Structure formats: structure tokens, C-alpha cells
Length: 98
Image 1 (tube, rainbow, N blue to C red):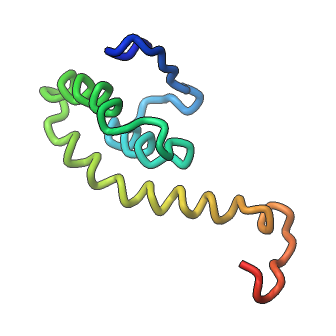
Image 2: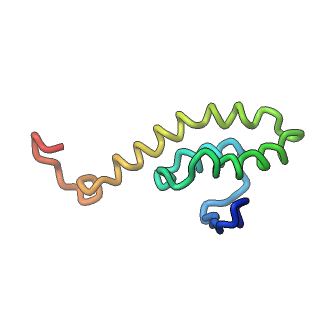
């Protein structure tokens, strides 16, 4: 897709499906790969038209997105924890090493 400033952006649809839009947005916002790739302005360019398109059929969408954010933060922190090299290799971390 093309942003309003003319830059090109890509959407990774590998996990696309028919889900609750609040879940999809919350997951995108909190995704471990998101980090600082998009700032508030870029997110607004996506979310404002998205919310506007769904406001009649899903008037509580923005409130539900806010409810998902802490859940996805916990979800992704757990994924990162369990995908650490020590867990992947099943090698115990020696005492005193973090």
C-alpha cells in the first residue's frame, strides 16, 4: 500500500483470517516485530480509515482494541521468553547468569 507521504508499505498477511478486528489491530500494535517501525502518525494513517469504515457495524471497536493491548503485551512477552536461546536449546542457564 502507499502511505499518504508517497512511501510504500507492505502488509504481512501470513496470519490473515476472519477474526475479531479488535484482536487483529491489538496484535499488530503489540507484535514483537513492531517495535518502533511505525510511529503514531503512521498508525493513524492506517487506523483512522479502518475505524471509520467499521464504525457503523462495530461501534465499540476502538474500546475493544484498547482492552486487547495489555493482553497482547503479555502474550508477546511470553513468546519472547520461551523463544530465548536457553529454552530453544533446552540448556539450563547456569546460576548467576541472566
